[in-house]
Image (cartoon, rainbow, N blue to C red; front, side, top):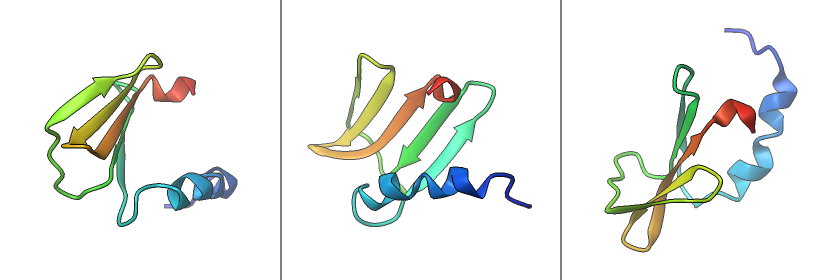
Length: 75
């Protein structure tokens, strides 16, 4: 698979560098226009919070284990 816009991926570097330590997993649902970002491979959320800007923060206790970004293509 050839990268169409390498600069788009390079623009992610600051966000990835400032994410929680460890690995980072992401997936995008084109039909639902939802971006999922996980900070733990098998992290299970015990709670979640919907922000005013349609972002769902997922917690395991007090630790953020992932975020779900709704309407991702509009950002």
